[in-house]
Length: 144
Image (cartoon, rainbow, N blue to C red; front, side, top):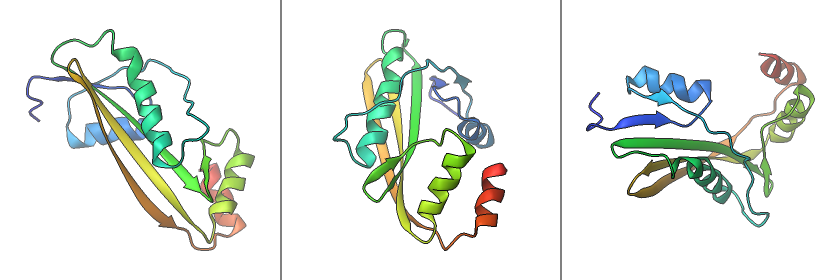
């Protein structure tokens, strides 16, 4: 794949994102600079994901070189006017899935692109509706 001479840096520890780049044949290196993912309390929905990708890009601003492209990404779930973060336990994951069962929620993915010339981003939100999930289905999913 032609990257127009850019070295692509995927600033993500997500195995799923890394696999996606590999499957597409996009040459890249993974470099993660840990940041605390927080957002303004008044932020809603997509604003949260966009804020977090900016945070993930910030540490690279002082070290990025010409011909490098740093890609950051974040996906969030917004349900009943609140952000559902990454579950911290199986119990919390079960609780979240029960809340999403038989309901519609929004999933937003934001992707940031940092070069020496600046930062640009895109975000896309999808509505997702779950049918009524059984306890067995929820527990099977969480344990897998």
